[in-house]
Length: 127
Image (tube, rainbow, N blue to C red; front, side, top):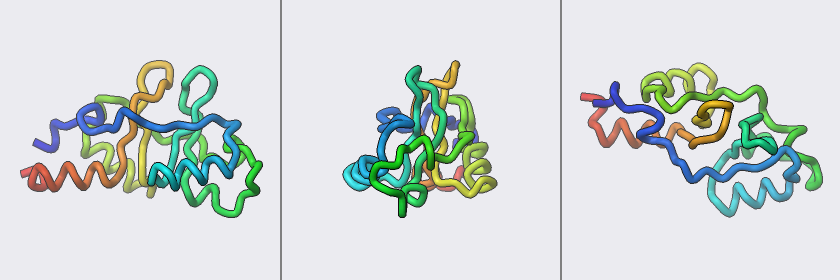
């Protein structure tokens, strides 16, 4: 049942992330190469400090560092957030992805709108 599924059940745990020092040119390359539209930004300790989307990087000088154009603070969820809660957050904030973070703000995974749609389709709309 859809209502019982959580972020931990559907998140992608093999998440590519970048640092605040990653330059715009490298961000563009990573987005294109991995066919994703956004990346979590983590600090030296692995805490999520921002998100960079394809829109954020457009028009930036190649040497501009991600820390200057990332979106922050981050809208994130914990691993026990339900799919319905995540869908509400994505809709309310008009965002495409939420990092799933554990204790101390460490990145555990990511859930995208496409993940939610896929889950709903597989479970027949939660019926």
